[in-house]
Length: 499
Image (cartoon, rainbow, N blue to C red; front, side, top):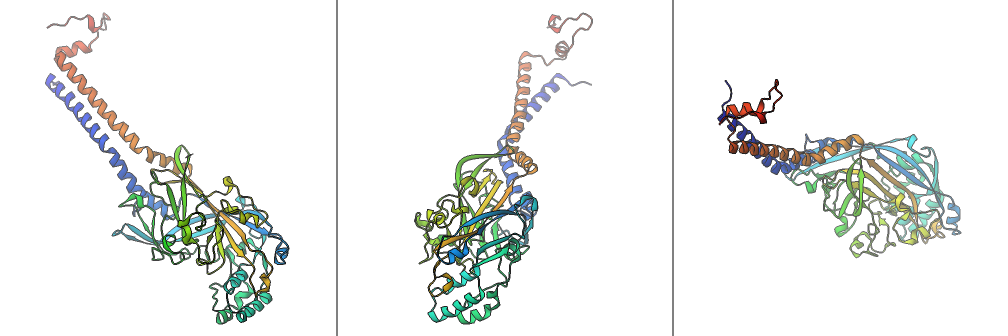
């Protein structure tokens, strides 16, 4: 039995109304649904995609090391010339991060964790071997010299004898010794005696810039970080480091633990700054938003970059005076790391002293700062905070200066010696790029789809209303409107319709 005219009319009106209402309502609320999907997948929870990608970073990261080989140490020691260096490298290592010892804290929307970083040498991406020898300033000797600079003359005489007998002014070591393997030093053999006489403590048995760090779960410390479940704007921001929200290395705002770890970023739509808490610096590096727009695999992003203010110490920007220790102010462009690095006279800067006071590059031959080569930047998709490309690079420097009573340093110039700079790189892969585009298009695709359904529903209602007004819901009318005479080839327009 066929559907009656009233049945047909009711069906069309019902379907049209249902599609129209469903489409409009879903379209209105879809943005909220899409936001929920964003939050549930990008924030950290035991089952989220964001947690899985953060726990073990899925994209390849590389650490590139460029050393400054010192070519004239004897002339510098004799006070006959300023230091001359030659950049060598890169020595490239594949870097992997894994979070361990994790504890969730839903009461304040945080997670506590430690991290393991591991590095493996990549010959194909390197210009040199880990067995290459590098000449550099003897960091252990100059650190001890700085520690006793203000000691009484009698104690300085003891240290002067030890340095002259045990320590060379410069050292020649392999790349692997300078980095991860470390090397033994005569001064370490008398460390206990030195501590008894001068109260100077040396807390390691070998020296290497990354010694004892590869595969360590404790070296970087303990973090407590916001998961973003309750507030996406907090996603990835460090709440505390080593169980404190303020470090003891810098006073005031400069000692605050703030910013992300650099791998998990919050949405950055309106953010003028991107702050990264760097454990090696015991402080935060802040990048400024650039007007430059970037693109990766069709995904538009914004660029955050280091600028001239970042390593100021109050010389040009008074608010950064808290990065300067009393009596140790240097020209703008470097940050004092001595308290963070066991008292070593170490300073961090951008590579080749980019954006620093000219005094630095004028004191050393062989440096050529270049913005396109030495800039620190992070490119990120703003609505999600997903990093598209990261190039984080910093330079480690050690202060060399005359020290009265220590013959090894009585003729040297005052100069900040560049030791090496490192470049950490990571880029979004094409596979992840495709997934990101789907996520970014989720809201737009859903809105178009649901409003499309509403349009179809509205069209059905319009047709139904039109047919109702014309009074053509009758059974005979239906036949008239659909049947074409196959024998005569006459269209329905030529068939008279009975009233």
